[in-house]
Image: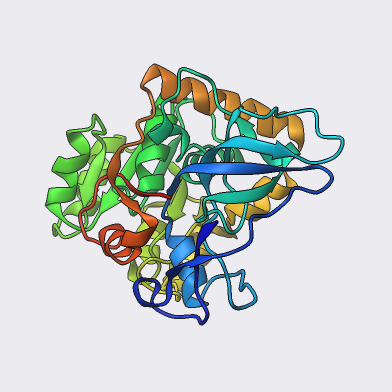
Length: 325
């Protein structure tokens, strides 16, 4: 079969190439899945560069989320069945025509969900709904997040609104505000305006912001903390701008702010089965009802991986870039 492989760590557009590799066979508790579509995530590219929390042995495959059809099952596997459409968000090496996955970790995809949405269902949407579950917010609570026009930021805003939460999004430029409002996300503030903190205060009407999500790092971390109320919580989700957070010590000391990290893979792995199932049921309902939208920026073949990486890294992109065998 054909698969994307990198012999060294480096620029994904340069080091990833299509190679012929043996067709894998499922073992006990495993199934083989024929790949239909797979999204490109930032953490996939960081892994290829060798800068992520997980560093595979070289030469390495790539990709972690995919939609496919069960092609073969291992011994004692009764579900999912051959022919079932399934999604996975934590299976390494899915940028291939076929991949092996744990049967118990696959998510059955209902017939009403189209391929493009189903291919994105697990990693980013589940991270968004898990993040809100992790924060344990109540209806009417206020939350602020940066990178509001990123994939997870959009999803947190949409899911949060459906749950009755008040979500304020921070973006770096005014055009990001207009872009999100076109998608029905209204509470957005651009931090390039001098009076942006006053804009936030008008939106909240003075209500306390009890939680913040930082996906950027650098000075943007401090921007989020500056908006938190006393005893507020900052959850660190990513570091798109800088691996170092710049947070004024006064805000942490005098507001008694708590800073926590959130790594979706670890949270998902440690989540009990009942909670995981309930959150996925909610997610699928949000997508089918139109509450949660999962746009696609473009679809590329494995042979077009360099173009796909460039498209995934392009500024102002709306929607995920997908790969197909």
